[in-house]
Length: 314
Image 1: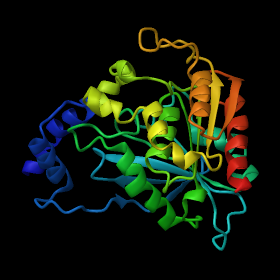
Image 2: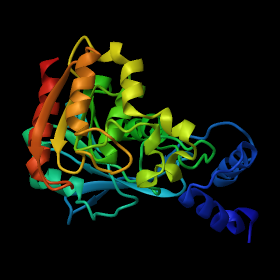
Image 3: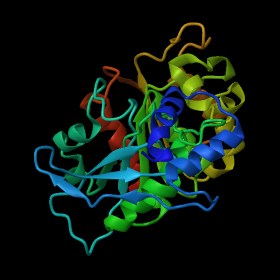
Image 4: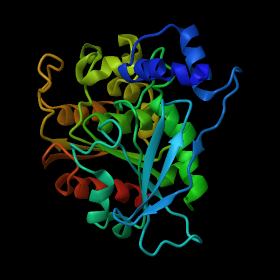
């Protein structure tokens, strides 16, 4: 058995537990995982898309140096899909690890809502083999979700289906931790993504929130976690969002003053709204959209309406 095969359990454990490892070991793991000894970047690989008739979506598996193993992406196309057209892509950001659906199935919901036909858009639902917070671990090279999204997944989608190929045609939507993810991806990469929507998310978490919701496993250190906090990113990049409206802030359910001990405010959504107004950041605010804290049509329909309306207005 090869060294690479013998090392897989160790690498798997390090990746999935989010253990802190020194930078030298991190670089070695990245090279071993990719099966090479050099430092050059090897692009991602992906299987050919296969149509899943039961789910009504196309599916393909990817392998990237930014993640541990194979990860499935589901793609929903309009019924009248035409390769001569250019489509916007809505990225449905998961809140769970792998293909778990305790909090709903985003792509099944989009299909059930007929969202792909209603909006004339492609919907893409990626998965991640560790709990997604849409950042990068301080030392573990196999937990770099933001780099995977920007450098691997978006190009792979656009190589396989006809899209606008511009930021204006790339939209992000999520709730809870993936609502934060939509905003952090948007704020850190405003040249890649055009619009983002967040529903019922802990947008106003500060450094004291490190450790809740497995943020320690994802980021590795409080310092790294702080680099991805929404308030700081919005303040640092406010100029990107003052000229036109690119953000949707919505939701009311868990994130009033919960989680206890990690947030002293009254309501994350309402306070994010006030905070953004203070920075001059233009945004659509839907503070009273109450629903079960999961993927469901009650919140997703009005938030998608608001998100796609922003894109149509430009």
